[in-house]
Length: 163
Image (tube, rainbow, N blue to C red; front, side, top):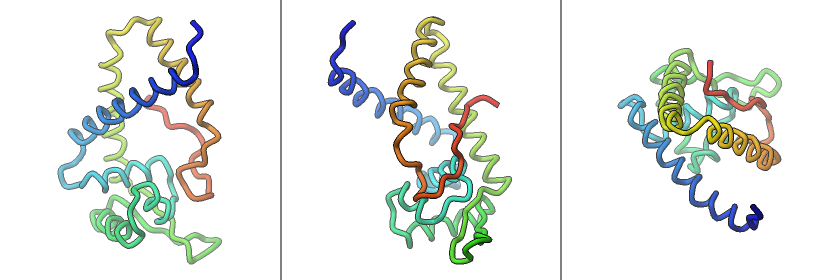
């Protein structure tokens, strides 16, 4: 099949947002009611980017630094996130999940993995292999995109949904 690149791009533009909407809805349904969606997204970001700075979280959430600081304050107050001074530059404060924050992040990730497993369970083994191969190809295509953090690589390895 000789599919033009533009047709492939059009399909990605349709499918990726659909998948993200479904995944976000599933995460919302399984996240703690005491967490707002922005707080949960911040937890998830920090789960993928341990030691990120406040500006990284703000950039990811598309919020101002002051709004992000208030949001992180709430996560610190509920013992889901800690602030740690950077030993090399005390002006920098790294954000990390606490054990409780990691537990919430892991539970949501596991629930999402279970949901995705159910969704692909009825697909043939050949189609699952095709999906997996496609995801690997996409990862390779987009691996040159800068990390989610502002210039300080943190977790270089992609997260797995398996334990």
